[in-house]
Structure formats: structure tokens, C-alpha cells
Length: 306
Image (cartoon, rainbow, N blue to C red; front, side, top):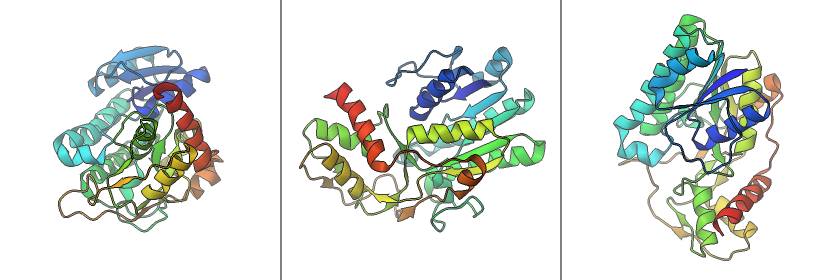
């Protein structure tokens, strides 16, 4: 395939670009940032700049497949900067999709999120209604529905991914639970939990997410697909497992208020994905258990931060 990846300098984007290049696909990276903490195989081209460069890149490189990953991904940032989040996640999505429409791109994969299900019943299935719950979740829900609208209105070949919480080598947003905990323990510091630690989330190793993206892109299937493990883990459980795997005895510091929920907000207690659709149509299941993924992740940080 001749692929364009938006958000190529992001955590998932780096891994996806590397996997595409290793398959000998023609891959063009669209990125604003030039620093990449994760080594990426040489791509066919790199386009510097924001999403305003999408249409030019599609035309110049004769792109047939677009992976739209570029987004503002942090809940706390969304609370602090809602307008910037709307710009990135809503305007950014329709900007990319309209460029794809005008350039007759054959296939588009749009990255949504399990957060688009909001406070809906878990485990989430693709057929249940999407639900707004805060700024970040609403921005992802809007992008998801915009992608659905373009597919319905223009007959575009669009698939939508709804992934759980991604983790793995190269994730350097230290406010995120897993990398933040690993870095703290490597520094002999107590990790900090920015919630009561109880709500459960579906944690998916990034290489398994990339495998899902590639299988979906190679298929003819459209619409939404969940990618997760089908199992929920609490923040306290994740920290305890990471601490055990790293041979540490440090106890976490518990903050009383969850970060990034907003004034008066109530944190969703369980966000877990059913992935039966991906298993049935794509023959996809995650290859890594949580412990296996965390071991590989810890080794990566240990080799670079210790």
C-alpha cells in the first residue's frame, strides 16, 4: 500500500510507521515534531507540518491509504484547553476526511477511542450508542461520528478503530500511568496515582494495536472495530504489578481527586472492550498478556533511563 500516517511522531504513529516500513509498504509520515524517542524504520517520505499539509501529501505521493492518528490525546489537557482539543480532534478529523474525499483515497482508517462509549455499559460493543462524558470523550465521539457521516454520505471506504489504553516502548508522556510509574521506580521515587486507583481500564500493548490497524487496513471491512483485551485493570493493580516486576517495594502516593475529570465530574468505573468483532472478521486477538507487555515495556525504559 501507499500509506500516509498523520500523527506519525506520536506514540502509536511511530510504531505503526515502523511496522509499515518493515512490510516494505510505501509510507509517508506527516508530523509536526521531529524528535522521536522510538527508533523508526526509514520511511519513503516525511512531510513536516500540520494537517493543512494532508491534501498536498496525498496528491504528491499518490497515497491510497490514510491512517488518521493525529489528535490531542490527554484528558487533563482537554479539561485545561477545550478549544485546542476541539480544533485537533474535531476540525482535524473533518479536514483530513475532506482531503481524502477530494483526492479519492481508496481507504481511510480513523483512530477513535474507547472513550467514545462514555458511561455506556461495559464491555463495550461496536453496536451500542456512543455517549458523551467530558471534553476529551466528546471530542473523540465527534470525530468518530464525522467519520461515519463521510462514509454514509460519500460512500467512502472508512474504518474506525476504538482502542483501549495503549502502553509500550517509546511512550514518554510521563503523566500517563504506566510510563510515569516506571520512571518513578527507576528514580527510586514513589509513584503517584492521580485518582483513587479503583476504576478499571482496558490496557492494550501497542504492538497488538498496530497488528489490529494493519489487519483492518488490509481488509475490506468498514465501520467501527474495538481493539482491547476484554479485561479491566485498576490503576492500583497496574502499579502493584509494575512494582513487582521491577523488584521494588515502594508504595504509591494516592491523590484524593482524579485528574482531568472536570468540576463536579464523576469518573467512569469500568471501560472494557469486547473484541469479538475483530476476532471474527479480522482474525485478530492480542498476542501479549498484560505481564508480558509490561516486561517488554520495563526493559525498554530500563535500557534508556536507568
